[in-house]
Structure formats: C-alpha cells, structure tokens
Image (cartoon, rainbow, N blue to C red):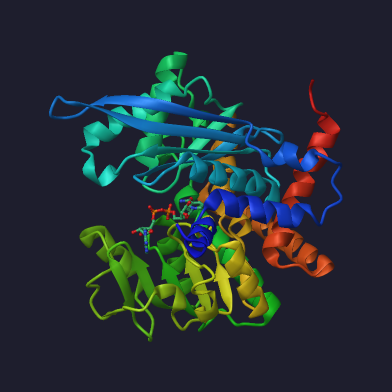
Length: 422
Ligand code: NAD
C-alpha cells in the first residue's frame, strides 16, 4: 500500500479516530502525568469462538467480542453489533465512545461494546437465536446489571435482547431484566426506548438551531440510513416542521425537494425492506451526504464524512445519529467551513439515556409512562447540550472537542476521588 493508501486507511480506522478525538481534547485539559494513558486504554477485551449448529445440521464457528472500555463511573454500557465487518478494533472504538457518551449526559455508566462477525440476513431465525444464546452464555460471567449491560446496535434488536435476558436468567436461576436494555416492553423494556436516540437527536438539533438562529420549521433535512435512528429522527423533525428532502439506506437513496411523507416512507420500508421505489420520490445518485440541505443526519455507519468529501458537504448542521460518521480530518475541514457538527457522543446519547431509565425501572420494578420518560430525556439532553455548548464557547473549540472535554473531566474527577487501586 502506498503512503496515500495508508493514510486513507488510517482515516477510515475508527479506533485511530477515537484515539485522535480523545487526544485532542485531553491535550487541552491539565491532566496529571500518565492519567491520559490510564483512561484511554480499554479495561478488558474478550474474544469468544461461538460454535453454532445450522439448520442443515452442519456446524459453523462465529467470532464474538466484548470490550469494556471503562467501569469507573458505573457498569460498562453499550450495544452489540452483528455485522460481517465487525473487528476488535471497531468494537474497541465504539466502547470508548460509550464511556465518553455516558459521561457527557452524566449518567452513572462506563463504556462497553460487543460484536459478532456474522451476516444476520443470511441466518434463519433459529440460527440467529442459537448464535445469540451462545454469545450470551459465553459472556454471562461478564454481563450483569452491576457489571456490564448490553443493548441493541446495528442489526440487533429487542428480540435479540429478550433472548439474552432469557439465557442470562436461566444461568442465574432467576429472571433478571436489568442485564440488558432495549428490550421489548413485555420483557421489562421502557416506554420510549425505541424512539429515544432519534428524540435525543431532535433535542440537540433544536438547541443547535436556536444557537445558530436557523428556524427548524422549513429547514431541509437529508438522512443517511433510514433504520431506527434515521427514521425516528426524520419523523420527529418533520413533526417540528422540517422538510425531509432526501433519505437513503443500503438499497439506495431517494429525494423529494418538496419533502418526503415520513410516516408513509416508514411503512414503505417495513413492507419493501428499503427506501428505493418509494412512490413520489426520485432516485438520488450523488452521495446523500453531499445533498443540498440545511441539516445532514448521518445515521448509518462510521467514517462517511472524510477529507475526500468534507469540502462538498452543503449542510449548515451535521447531527451525528451514527457513531463516528466524521473523521478527524473531515472535522477540521467542516470547522473551517463553519459547519456546526453536533458530535455523536452528544447527539445520539438519547438512546443510552433511556437505556439508563430502563435499567432504573427494572431495578425498581416500577414503570414510567412514556411522557415521563420523554420529559426526563428532554431535561438530560437539554442540559448536556448546554454544558457542551458552554464549554465550546468558553474554550473556543468545536462541539466535538468540547464534548470530549466535558466527558473526560467527569471521568477524571471520579478517578481522582476513587484513586487507582494497587
Ligand atoms: P439500523 O440497523 O436500524 O439502521 C441502519 C440503517 O443504515 C439501515 O437503514 C441501513 O440500510 C442503513 N445503511 C447501512 N449501510 C449504509 C450505507 N452504506 N449507506 C446508507 N445507508 C446504509 O441501525 P440503527 O440502530 O439505526 O443505528 C444506526 C447508527 O446509529 C449506528 O452507527 C449506531 O451505532 C448508531 N446508534 C444507534 C443507537 C440506537 O439506539 N439504535 C444509539 C446510538 C447510536
């Protein structure tokens, strides 16, 4: 690989990017010598081989990961991703982002993440269940309400969480709902959890619009990735009067300058497994992140905005629904071009915030109505946005650096109070 190829590869490396984001913020804080290394490295990374008997009687071995980045502020918290491209490095980056995310919204969790290398589209329901149960069983010593609490991420859902609850509960010989979040309502889930990440994004976008003096009513929005986060964000923003002018998913991209009918698009995607072909919309061939809009919501996978395309981003606000969609090189370009980026660890933290509410409700055995969940979420998100904006204005840094500074300070404060056990 030539040096240009190597540097592109580096830009697409989420673990390297998470480290660069951390370093940039940490270097602005006056941390005791060596402490930066203490909080940068994951506490524990586990790799498991998961044998599964397939429907045709054959056996296959899948690889699973669980990384606990930090448990300083509370149990490790973070989703489980099922994807053919999952790597230990990616999971490690996502685990670190969870530590900073939980600290930004000031909830009592550390950071973790899990992954299984698989293509769930090619597995039957039975195969998916057996794979999930084997993963949960092999990691049941790590998991627990007080130690490590997984949740859904890309290609995992409430059903998969229900299987994990059941597997863990069978091992513990008692039902334990608080071991995972993002569960179905009937299995200890929280009202409002499914919509929480998109709703948190809405509160951040409202904050950004108010700060920048951009009216949300009539603002043009493009959404990359029309899954849980993208579709709920689009729906809620449209209810606030925004116009969703483009949307995409793995099947392709569509545009409608007059605005998409979001509830109809959601029903279409349920029936047709993708946005493509939605009546009344035109197929969109240029990359959706470069679409002419006021607000861009990357809500698919990592490193979608890079130094290759950052100059062509036309949005005034980038609201990061996905984790790690913008590389550090792209961040610099966007900052120079005055694009206001609401960083992932703030913008998509509504999901983990309501996961925290779910865990609290499980432990109380008392469940809140949805309006109570939503108003508690609004209070936390509005405070977190205000904390990060204030830090950004005080130190004249962009919102990402400010969010990392807020988060690192909170983690460091706890480490200094608790001390390092020896
Ligand atoms: P999901 O599986 O429900 O949806 C992902 C969407 O992205 C799908 O529509 C898929 O078709 C689309 N997609 C995949 N590759 C694409 C590509 N190359 N171009 C365009 N679209 C593509 O997943 P989700 O839960 O919505 O998560 C999306 C992102 O948000 C991930 O980065 C995830 O880590 C992050 N996130 C999710 C939550 C949550 O509560 N679900 C919370 C925080 C962050």
